[in-house]
Length: 292
Image (cartoon, rainbow, N blue to C red; front, side, top):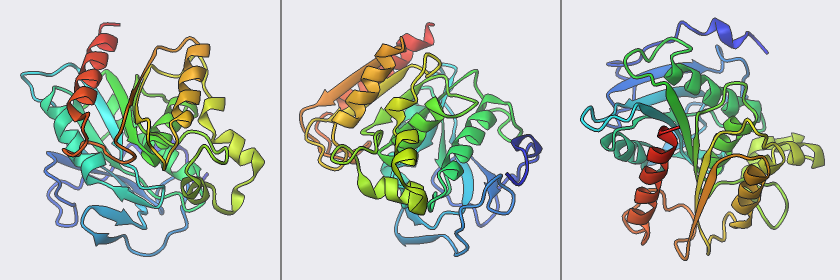
């Protein structure tokens, strides 16, 4: 480790800087890059965006913050981890568009542009944990946007990252919402490209077991909501079912909704038949855990 995380309280504020991407956020915060983060992902080429809102070769972590509607504010916040197979970030429908919906419903949302692992699995996790610490007010940089209850939201490989923060991080989220997450590395029950990108040349039986997150659940894992489709061929639903079973075996509050159709990668897209259902389920669940 180059430096301890505690040294990174002086974060660079990017608001108003021309290089900050505009997704409609109220505030943009640079967390760190390969030169200043605890670990380097080995990517030394510029970030690419060959298609709109598809970010490749990400080597700088940042937060795009969407504050809660004050009239509906619940006191909760979420860090949102977009998916993309640990090779890219689908930062629109699994990122800032989802953040806009959470914010409109009273929950401050911070979209995390996390660095791609490129075979360094510690890299995205340290980005997610630092983002949580920032939104909790434990690290500097997000004054006015922090919350006492900061959860994490993730889709697909971003769901794996969110579940990693829930199980492996020292600073865990208050709750987690996982959309069709990658969980287990077991062949036939996973998305192989995601684990190949995460682990790279280090991938073996031992690392597969370590990052198969149903194996890492404890009683300290936060309450979790899982949202998925029965006909998902990219990440088989059994992956989430194993995680749900592990949560219940450890006495963790959990809920799971398996919709009949939709496949993979629907996020907040209008075309998903059960969009209104998952949104109401998420709001009901967030209201329930907020009472605790």
